[in-house]
Amino acid sequence: MSTEEKNDSNQQANASDLRAEPLSVPKIITFDSLARCGDEVWIENLGQLYRLRRTRQGKLILTK
Image 1 (cartoon, rainbow, N blue to C red):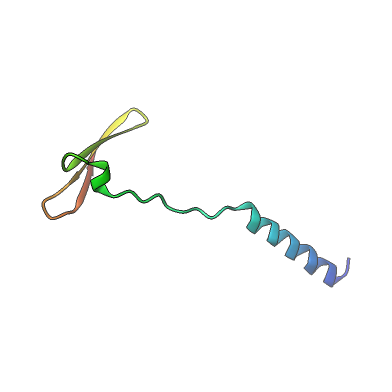
Image 2: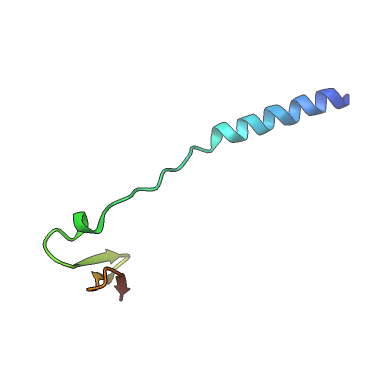
């Protein structure tokens, strides 16, 4: 296989790798939309409960 053929083969492989990976867009949700009636949300994940609350200063605290 010539050097030119190897380069073409590598370029095709790289192009197929780029097509195979979709761009991921982060899902952005405002805290206000989660906590419609207050300053805390309880989240269940794999059987564990977590509390996400907003402080008076506007910071978020996640506790188990």
